[in-house]
Length: 122
Image (cartoon, rainbow, N blue to C red; front, top):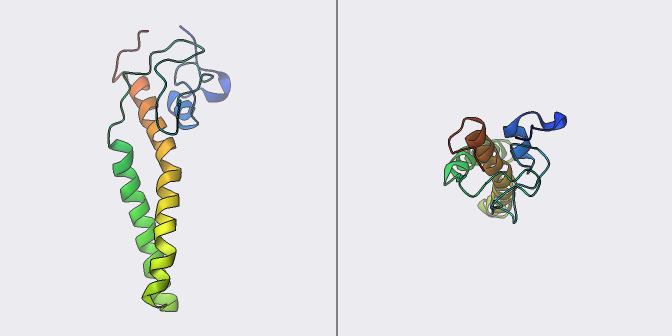
């Protein structure tokens, strides 16, 4: 069984940066959110790891908190017209959500591997 590389000793950290949770060298994703069937370096089967809706739930809560706070601050500080909010917040919400989705999905896959939520055998 291959060990995790020294620079990514945590399976969760390795998965957050898009690497195999076991060896830390192989690619975790084959597309933006599609997980490889197996690691090309160590052979770990990744097709059983399923994050489901977990990352999306956390992202909705976190991004919602950030954007609601920022929108409230903007409204109280500057009192802009409604159209300013309609121009600013949809792109901010989209950018934060899309940017956070892959690392959160990686974290879920890494946590599943670390805590043996799925079988570790090849």
